[in-house]
Length: 309
Image 1 (cartoon, helix red, strand yellow):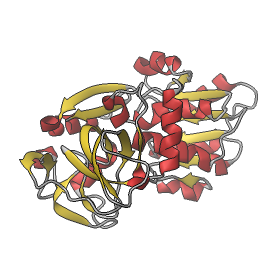
Image 2 (cartoon, rainbow, N blue to C red):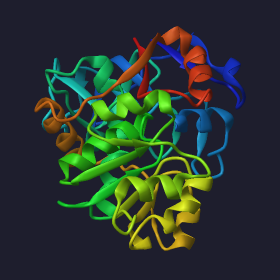
Image 3 (cartoon, one colour):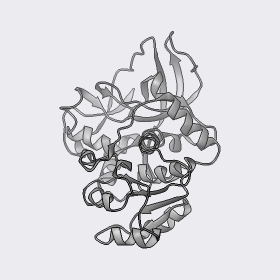
Image 4 (tube, rainbow, N blue to C red):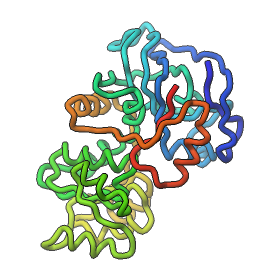
């Protein structure tokens, strides 16, 4: 099979298209012919070696945890999937080596679900990791009907899905921080936009009215935005960050996406119902994975970047 692989950690130049053996599948795995693979910020961390002390890494290393495609074969213990099924999923494994930037992926059952018919492979390829991150983080802080939710960096890959998931969970208002060029985009998703920066606390208070506080703060950027969050929420235990463990010292929660089939199915059902839209800013062919990473590193992506295979 063709795959993007790296033999060392480093800049985007380490990502090269090459021929690798087709992956074998174990009794409880699913062989997926990849049609699309989402590009996520964590892929850069893997590429650079920033996670090597937390998770075992092996070379040649194929990056990527997001996948959408068609089932080619299933192991004898697999239930619920059959050759020809269109699927999508989050394929983080215990060792980092056999990722999704490839023509074929040996996928785990727990991180796979059936693709909604109304989602393209490109959209489905960008849904799993960001969608699970949004859903599981918002559940950690018990978003429920009537809540006002603030999403930091609401126009990004996780942020734009968090806006929509919060509404599905019943939030009465969702406020999203973004640069002015993305304010119209946030309004189209049902969020009330607000500019970030030094005046964030005052801007949010003015928009919210009353006591100027929100019920939940969802942090996708860390740093100053996270540090401002205690001044924005009624209860610091309802601050959740997906990027900065310093949130624990503020009394909040830290969230890290887990491959849970039931949660993937929840995302699929709401996407099928037209309640969850995956916005893809740009696609790249598999061979141009390095260019996709360059765009990602610019930190101005609206929605998702996806590789097509």
